Length: 109
Image (cartoon, rainbow, N blue to C red; front, top):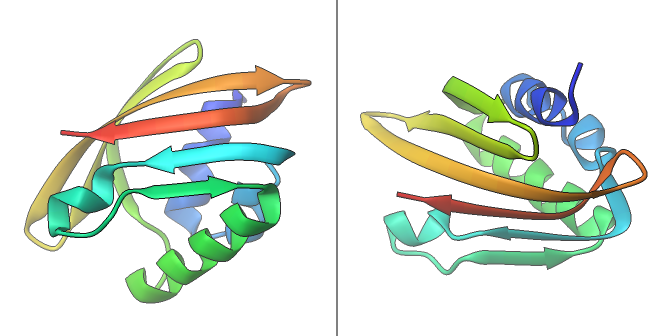
């Protein structure tokens, strides 16, 4: 199973520990999707910070995220995130190192 497929599976399952295990210790994670609901973009450095953030996100979402319409092409991914009546199109790109995510940038349109 590809790294990005596991990324999606762990988002759906609400497993912050497994999600964070996909990243290098010093990984960078950037997500501008929160601007769609009036919040600041998320910019994190380090696996522990990524895990803490995702754990909080899953807590607020009361479990995993509703991720659908997934398309993976190499180090790029396209997916929809459903939240209530809203649907956000996410486009992500990774840089990998030793079969882990070194950098992940996602833009939501």
